[in-house]
Image (tube, rainbow, N blue to C red; front, side, top):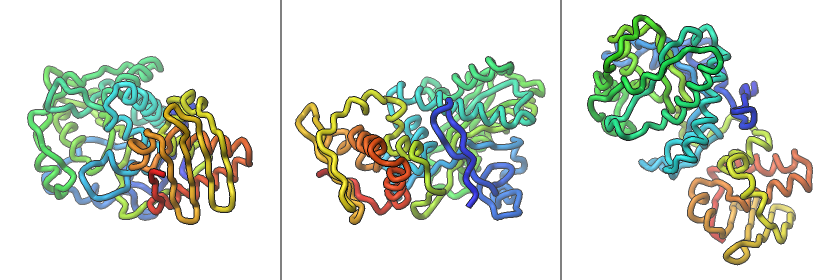
Length: 362
């Protein structure tokens, strides 16, 4: 199988770009030999014009879990989805700024890879909240992206303050496709700005049906925008089961399972004191010195279960099947004691069938 092209966010966080074949307009999956997906070729009747030229996405966004409304309890499928979860569901600014800065670097790399599309970009914006005082997640991406662009020879103006929503449209998740477009039509408005034929770049965190950027592009065309292109972090791909593209490298896997802690908070992991670590057959057992007494860990490969008892694991990591600092430290230590390929295989055996693994309190 062809491997997805890999890029590194800020030279350190590996992510996989979407593998071809995909729709040349919106990067949705298509069959070999097809240039456009069904939705782009057969939009709802209200869509007389898409208004934007092209959508480029950094990677696949998907989460797996029970079919409920709480996406924060679902399991992100890859590093891009992890970063989007930090951006969308973490409340503190530090998490959002961390994720936004990395994602801005990834989007900038797409700009550099596609100069023919973005070389004449003059304006940048995103879809705002109806409540003008609520900061949107995309601002954490736009601000560092704008700095990168202007530092590297672009002359781009942020027009987010000129972009407004006239009404709320409600939750889109359970709406039929045509209803999404009908509800969003006419929502966006551009205030006090004439684009005088200049090119505009729309930033979005997740692209699902395209209804939001379609209506935002419509409003821009009404204000004489030139070519409009869209940069998106995650292309939402729906799966009915746990789907992963391929085996990942050790660095990708440890970043993924640690929820980026290996990069974001390495000292916290380095400070973990492992008092006992034993590997035998299909079992890994470990003990740790903790501030509230010793912690224990059991990884049972035969029965596909991980049991641990630190507070972070129980309250934050267990439900989304992520590693706390103790679990992360175990696999780092195992890598130092064994070959990298051995430990990579251990992690891949969890990742490739993560839907069948249980994370429990010991």
